[in-house]
Amino acid sequence: MQLKTSKSNGRLYLSIVQGYRDPVTKKVKHKTIKSLGYIDILKKEYPDPISHFSKVIEEMNKKANEEKQPITITFSKDEMISEGTANRKNIGYAAISKLYHELNLHTFFFNHSRKFKSEYNLNNIMKLLTFSRILNPALKKKTYEEKDRYFENTDFSLDDVYRSLSQVVTFRDTLKLYLHKQIKKTIGRNTDIVYYDVTNYYFEIDKQDEFKRKGVSKEHRPDPIVQMGLLMDTKGIPVAYDLFPGNTNDCETLMPVLDRVRKDFDIGRYVIVADKGINTADNIAFNLAKDNGYVFSQTVRGANKELKDYVLDESNYRNTGEGFKIKSRLYPREIKVANANGSRSKVRIDEKQVIFYSADYDRKAKSDREPTLLKARDLINCPSKYNKSTSYGAAKYVKNLTYDKDTGEIVTTKQKLYLDEAKLQEEEKFDGYYAIVTSEWDKSDEEIIDIYRGLWRIEEAFKVTKSDLETRPVYLSCNDHIQAHFLICFIALVIARLLALHLDNKYSITKIIESINKASGSLLEENWYLFDYADEITTAITQKLGVDLGHKYLRFGDIKKILGDTKKS
Image (cartoon, rainbow, N blue to C red; front, side, top):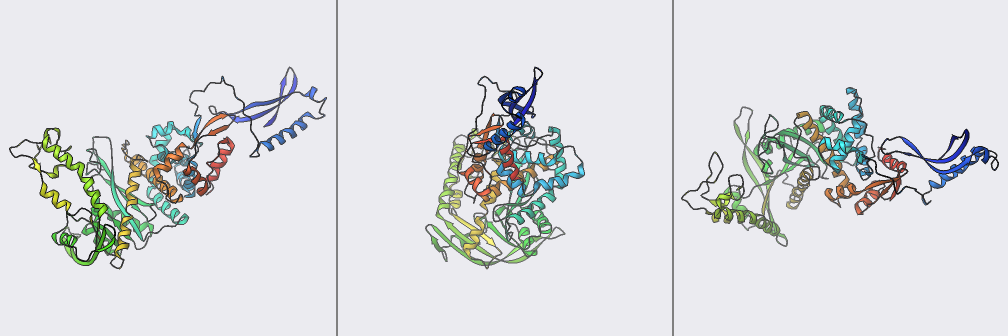
């Protein structure tokens, strides 16, 4: 509040006014709190009215700043909402802002954008794109249109947003390395064991190019895709990623990712943990040649007869819990490794094979198979309902099934369709059995299984990118913009996982995002906002991160202070 002097009828008039920022024009306006009167009349009671009321206002401001001092807000019941006014704003993103600035991303973008000499602030754009990718993922245009849901500086245009994507991609690899170093410095990072997996993301386009290629889609879609190989540490925090053309086999992505990380990230010896799709002779030889280790799952149903017989042989299994048994052996074997000239040479390796059976996994396997069997039986009874694409999964259980090479339609023949009982029985024999192969023969069976089970975190990360962060479908066409899109998604994933870690991994990322999205408030009047949501997650954020999301009423100045505190890295 402040003292205002104005002229009325040629005489000086005093009033107490309160300043606030108009949400539409962004300009400062004043609202009269109390009319005091003409100075010449006030002088009859106060020798120096200006000095007197200045002290009164000073005391009023002092009391107003006391936390428990009641606040009076006046408003007109007839006031109308101005078109285009963003009365509803989010404050939950302060938790994301805290981690963004702890990683010193603002400093990185400021330093690396100077060479472009752009009129816009690259960091402000990257904050908007990162925050929105976590809280409200959408097309870049829609993200820009909804920028006013945050209390941030957004003095840039939509064209600036697209220009920034081309800039960011020029220092993509530098940024990934920078993030790794910042995480190592702020929370520590153990890379003795790293997890690796591959997924793909589809584009809603028909035309392919050298990058967007049709391949084996994880979601069984016919669209062009791009492959992503992701490396993660034991805390579930992403380390690095690379993108590959959509027709690249999963197993071919590991060596390029690891080679770059080993050279640039200086992570020392590591043990790579991955699923059976990465378990190839070349990948094993690559790791052993660099004096690194591996823990890979091994297919049981697709294994050779010797391993299958060993799995089903009840000898030497140890019962370690209800419905759980385990055994292992040191097993020398020969693998054929590719040479520089394209030929393959036999290499002998000594590895440990860990086999375990879980009754829970057995029941789950049968339960997961049941819908496919129901589909197979329906296919047998009504083949006209299906084609090569729609019969996917069920077709392997149906004998005498043939397709038209051109149309993919099921061809009717004299041979009757029937369920392949022999194949089903062969599969069921191995339900609940898992095999792991590893170079770490000195570790116990339980340690190896425990290490392998950590792979679920990277699988969860991919689910987060596809569902919560909505990384796909990708609508961008320019390769620079596509690369920048995935870089932003990677930053968002790192921050989301760090947020979950700071909350002791007690809540899923989906639940965290849901809560901080709801932590929003509406403008009341005179720069006061009413916030109307709190739960155990917002309370935990206040306690663990020191980001105050607990107040019901906040002035704009208080909000700016809360957000300002998150930017003190």
